[in-house]
Amino acid sequence: MRVTMIGTGYVGLVSGACFSEFGHDVVCIDKDALKIEALNGGEIPIFEPGLDDLVSRNVAEGRLSFSLELKQAVAESDAVFIAVGTPSRRGDGHADLSYVYAAAEEVADALDGHTVVVTKSTVPVGTGRKVREIVSERLAATGSTATFDIASNPEFLREGSAIEDFMRPNRVVVGCDGEAGRDIMRRLYRPLSLRETPILFADIETAELIKYAANAFLATKITFINEIADLCEKTGGDVQAVAHGIGLDNRIGSKFLHPGPGYGGSCFPKDTRALLATGQEAGVELSIVAAVENANRRRKQAMAERIIGACGGDVMGKTIAVLGLTFKPNTDDMRDSPSLDIVPALIAAGATVRGYDPEGMDEAAALLPGMVFCEDAYDAMTGADAVVVLTEWNQFRALDLNRTKELLKAPLMVDLRNVYDPDEMAQAGFVYHSIGRRSS
Ligand SMILES: NC(=O)c1ccc[n+]([C@@H]2O[C@H](COP(=O)([O-])OP(=O)(O)OC[C@H]3O[C@@H](n4cnc5c(N)ncnc54)[C@H](O)[C@@H]3O)[C@@H](O)[C@H]2O)c1
Image (cartoon, rainbow, N blue to C red; front, top):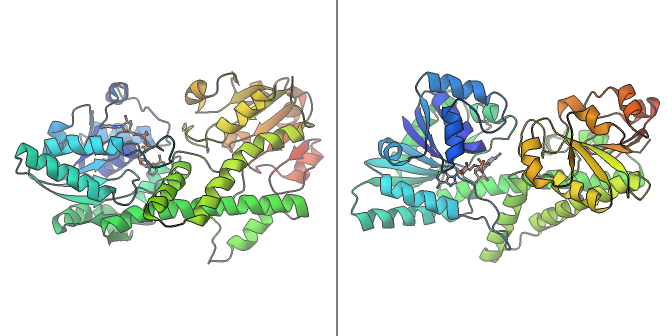
């Protein structure tokens, strides 16, 4: 099958490369000339484990290419995916759909024959219907004889394990309004259905809602365990053991019960806000999602207070080493990362912050002015009054504790990801604070 992927970001590039790995012919389009130039020069503009090999193999085998020009690719395609960004609109939290609609217009002008136009971007319920209107109107205005079906195929991949998630998903969701479109989608995902991956067909509105409901539910789990962690800190009890104890119940499940500094990233914060905006427009109170969004926002802000408290209540003139800046390990994505709340608050309180991240430094440079960017974890800790583990990259899980103690002015660690064991840290001579467990 021939596929055009519009938007070559985290989702578009991974999805495009994976579809080509399935054996389809894929052209990935982007407006960003630097991105396309880099890709055509064999460079991957984002950090995603395994993506460089996957892309270079499929490019070499002639199934994957990159272009700024969508016209020819769209005209020759069976399926055109829109995988552009849908960031929060300033002010009202609604998803900004301007990129989706602009892409839909361009696609309409290039359609030829029969094509399924698929939104892979996360878009509020009703967007598919609007895309259909846009395409129909453009076709009528230009007198085009092209025909099309609309589909919604939300993406559930996680940055850091995106290829595995695309290749072995729990399920694929397809909302589609035409039999020809459904047939194309079935054929596109055939390598997965052969492996018995459930392919769920639904109407477009249902598919759009599944994506938001899934993200809001996962955000709720994280926020729930974070509040239980707060309770453990006040009452005694170990949140890790509580999470294990409840997670063994099949009705609850163990995933997404890791306490931390609050969820961030390119999806949960904006998607919960967008779902709330949809609820408001529809006159439906989504009080649980509202509470989650509010609690998570307050939590990220409260984390700086927690670090300042661990430093004796005042960080004026102190130096704090921050290990990890991205919202999670194995990505360079800084969008809505907790570091964007915590680091500026520490700097505002008078601290010097020395930060290091294995992959996020380039992105962070523009977002965290005033932070000192360091060579590695040990460089960041040199002469610092405390070290904060903010993102659980593997290389921060096994720090040389003797060296850490020697480099720090005082052996003080605030571990916002619970990667160390309180007893071991006490034995190693650290004052150790973590989430939802006693301090040592
Ligand atoms: N990042 C994730 O982990 C993830 C997971 C699931 C779903 N999603 C959703 O997928 C969508 C894309 O997310 P992302 O993280 O890949 O975004 P991104 O910002 O990394 O990539 C979007 C790309 O689209 C390009 N673009 C914008 N308008 C264009 C146009 N008219 N023509 C061609 N290219 C255009 C941009 O230049 C950019 O490269 C969003 O709706 C997001 O919510 C993201």
